[in-house]
Length: 468
Image 1: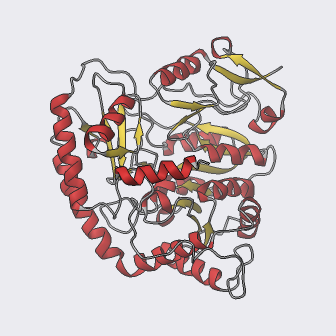
Image 2 (image 1 turned 60 degrees about the horizontal axis):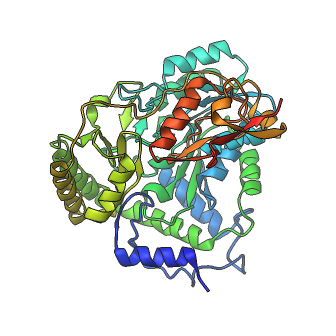
Image 3 (image 1 turned 90 degrees about the vertical axis):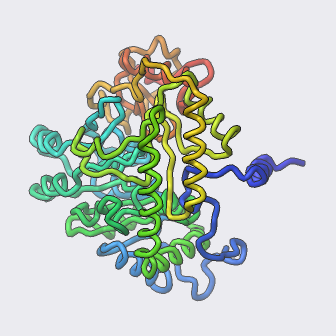
């Protein structure tokens, strides 16, 4: 008998490879907890997540107080369920939602399930083609062009840690009494120290969804949704959230969220001040590297970037190795794992759980790697720029149409029937209802040839298209 998942994790622990990736606990415990002893069901006194009036209600109220929200909700299915519930609560079938085209897959799932019609707004791009912020000016233009838009949803920070001007975008929407939903999955640590960006909620966003597990010391799949608004139907949002979340919510997850919130309530100043100091010292040293170019404050006010997360270490890379091979080299030679390898950049994630010793190990490793790698002069784009367009038919309708598999080389001008998603970060290159363009096909092949996995593309290089 074998247990492949258990065996993999057991072996991983033996290797003791250091995680510069999520979750934010970095496989260390901020507080003691016995997982099995905390794993209960809705017994007497345990309250019920789907109709809280006891300890869960109290814990959520304390969470709202910490965040400065009117009301907060525990998300035991991660941010995904909350993002889908958010969209379903603000849009009826065929109503328009203004959606940033660099949103996570769960946003597209929410659009699909709601039957809404997306109007896509594309992020600005840095010179290296990495998607950046959403332009307030283009937001206003989209609202002028589509006066029947019902809400807007954006991702801020992005996977790379770039933040849009939330306040300005929120002000534009609020003049038309429209809500702003922000996927702040990677920004649960915002607002605890001035070294990091301000939270979206503090800048006027109406509904903010955070994945606490990405940057804070809690278990994977724990998230929180915050509402601070008079134009969000809270009861409707909660109803959809209840539908989309499991009927057997993990008390272990809720307990860890509650305890982490309690620690942050009382010790955030101490924890984040020390973390910011360690991180600032590390970044100062990393900026001296020549071949691993750390993206830093030079990006501010470019490509609609209002703020950026210094906890994300994003390096532009241009070496003689495929970035995936570079990732494996870090594991083999230096015993640490990065978060993500793009086409010519890598991302490392830090948190309050990273020590000075951990950062010193990273700095020594990168200094050593610079001496061993040959770097080329020519560059290829970190991402392929997608040509701006709206779907030919709504994602909901496209998903229901008859589908067939087609060779990627024969798909130009066909309608995409499923998602094509490079992982990470989980932003669809193509979504249901979109016309497949030649540039999309080239991007898919380029990304796959660089060793990046694409969900929706099989081993025969076939994708799903509408059979119309």
